Image 1: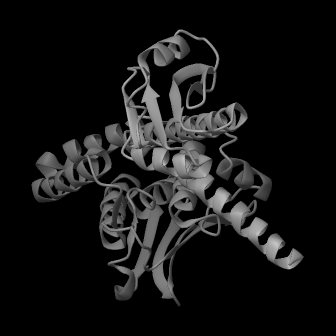
Image 2: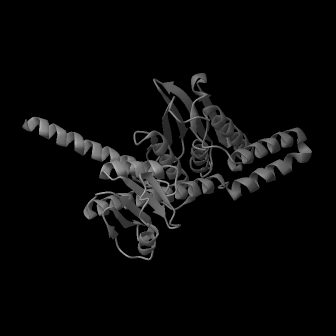
Image 3: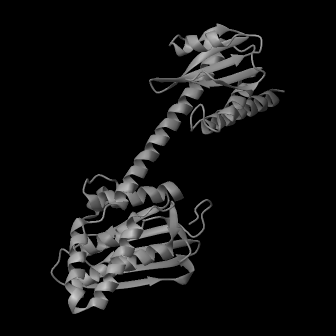
Length: 348
């Protein structure tokens, strides 16, 4: 008999945890989000209530189960929204719902449920609302940083590219026209609105356009090798994750020196993964500086770009993915991107 009781307690605890997690997931978009009715249903089952409602600051409750048809809920809602604490007694009670320090709404419970259980349910909802608010804030910050990365075309690069194109208008008009089309293609891809994902093929096309412009600027100083295996061209990747790596390789691996520099870009399949490498033979950097760059600890634009790419990769694919930087002073720099060749929900 005792093992049966223990098993029953364990099953009940598991069901409670599952229900609590479901409530949290469904309320990530707030009390008036698409999951609010489902959250009310799970809370009602969790409490064993006849009816349960969630109301935002408008005071319009979303009910699950049997509403308190014969009771006037308006005074309870108004009292809680005025800032008063939990009100009412069974069979009808109300408790405030907070998101951080802000009042977000009211929880209404109809049935023989203890006041303590109602308060605990309100606390569960409050934590879910706060978690959703923090997640939304982090997402907005990431999107703002991504938009900044899209707009981050070096004025120095733009000026030099247009100067070179202008110098060729008379001496080599065909070459000038070709470079102007490359420049238009490059800026369109960098600044235009895109979805969240593109393909390795599109990213490599943008890379080759950028490198064509840089070869016009740097002449024989810039040597380029680009190799990509056909089987990875269709792999979906987050938009604008490879171009910043190539820009950094040129700006820090080739431009500072007076002599020639080599930038190598490769893409190949390794089992179920797509592995892309961007390498330069420039001055490199201390490994601790590379770690600081990836952590976002440096405030210069290049660090922001690399940290942004690393965070987006880890957000999409999980903590096992992201950027790997292999470097040391005097030995160049190699940045490796490893992503799954197939990932559910990641489509160009």
